[in-house]
Amino acid sequence: MAEDLVKTIADLHEEEALRIVEERLRAGEDAFKILEDSRNAMEIVGKRFENREYFIPDLVYSGEILQEIAEIVKPKLTGANEFERLDKVIIGTVAGDIHDIGKNIVTFMLDINGFEVYDLGVDVPAQKFIEKAEETQARIIGLSGLLTLAFESMKETIEVIRGTGLRDKVKIMIGGGQINDEVRKYTGADAFGTDAMSAVLLVKDWAGEK
Amino acid sequence: MIEEKTPEELLQERTKRVEDAVQLKVPDRVPVAPNFGFFYAKYAGITPEEAHYDYDKWAMAVKKTVLDFQPDMFVSPRMILLAPGPVLDMVDFKQIKWPGHGVSSNHSFQFVEEEYMKAEEYDAFIEDPSDYIIRTYLPRIYGVAEPFKMLPPLSSMMVGYAAVHLTAALARPEVTNAIETLSKAGAESLRWRSIMDSIHEELGGMGFPSCAQAIAEAPYDVIGDFLRGTRGVMLDMYRRPDKLIEATERVLPMQLQAAVFIAKRSGNPRVFIPLHKGADGFMSLEQFKTFYWPTLHKLITGLIDEGLTPWLFIEADYTSRLETIRDIPKGKAIYHFELTDIFKAKEVLGDVACIRGGVPSSLLCTGVPQEVKDCCKKLIDVVGRGGGFIMDAGSVIDEAKPENIRVMVDFTKEYGVYG
Image 1 (cartoon, each protein chain N blue to C red):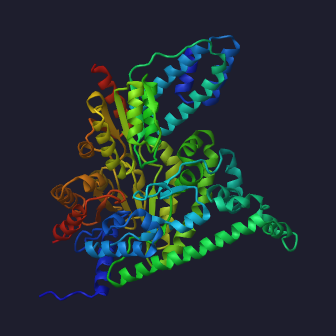
Image 2 (image 1 turned 120 degrees about the horizontal axis):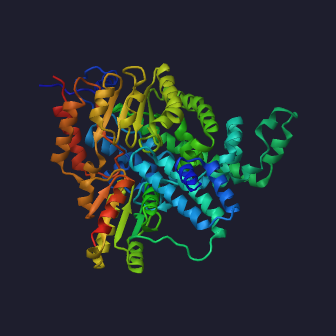
């Protein structure tokens, strides 16, 4: 039955998945186990995305299904059943840019890969990144931006971070459809990516370095 | 000694150069048409906010840039702003943030993603789009149109003699007020339009054709951009696929009709069609063939049937869709690529469509002139071979180093000559 739920979610059968969840709860099953299955299903979704069998709409839809399940099971959860988290990552769309689709996908993919993600939203001033880094001690920062104006903003953000003495302690990645290595050099970032998978690989790489 | 050409001769020469490229003939040289956006403002030393609010300054910025760079076509200033600042203020527009109103006065406007049409409203939209737009959609996107929610169904005008229901609703002070404000905004729009029209005429008189005056969108993008939002329309592919397809079919003839009307009135046959939400990664190829391409294909062929030239501005990456979009009449359309592998595009589509683009925006922003020159050389050698190519940036040029634009234009004029 556990297999059923994992497969049903991974194959994006929304109604069927919700029905199984309700049934299992009615049968008195531990809500935490249902969440665990959901998380396993999300890992499969992530793999399929990596392999280009799934695309952005599939991720969005699977996230939607996951959220519905979480809403059903949350009231039944007892105690602090949090999943153990890997490294912390701060992410946000840089000042002046209000695009969030790419950033949200990176957040989603990092989340299902087990990282603790602090998503600061869009149009984020440099100071916010710094405050969050100091508060959480996160050592990886992701700057997102779609527009070419974001290049300048990323550069400024990284300069402000440098000014605080924090630069040597954090790894900074930049991402967006228009980003390439020239832009990376221009902004002074450590690495760049143009899709969510490259962000996951970078973070895994950096997290493993310590 | 070469005699100076008259502006009329230059206009004809440039127009023919572009049309030859579109028809896949070999022109005298590769046409070059930088896809200027807010670069006009930056280059001329005005802020995007001034571009929105000071119509004469904006017109002067466009003129200065075009005269300085001498492109084969210029981007209509109307395509960039879409609406001037005072009009956006008056109607209290919710769908974008513009300079000084949500984004800094030095930045271009940006779209605000929302579900402006709820998932359960598909039927109302499909049933009677005009009624839906006036009574439900406008109140959500124009603060000033909020009282239109009080109007009775517009079809009620059909019966009951003097359309008593409607006229009574129009007499409500809130509604009267909204109509008056919209009317003032309309007068302001006309003032703006006449200044934008005069810059077209002036530049035309100096020998420069514009890229396009008419605009249309792929029906799926109309639904995704303006009504349901990116997330909404993606979920609709799973939860209500039939409604989504029906809505795209409903939108198609409206897009066609509006574009044909404006293109014919302007005398410029090209119709700008920016593609947004059908790119690689944004949906599977199967979803593209199911939800996106069928009505886009009909839009393209419908415009071609009217003697017009669709200019598809294909944002993001379409490398996996090249075979699919081959299915259009030969030598009738422009495919303008951003991140698609343009060399592969030439291989797959070279005998079908004129290819435009190829110079990355990132290179124009951060590179040096020699790198731009190398990039243009390769594009002319490979994509320009045998004609059917227009040199351009891959995306809209907002920020770029002027010297990089200069070398892109001048080098293409020099090296891009067909011998």
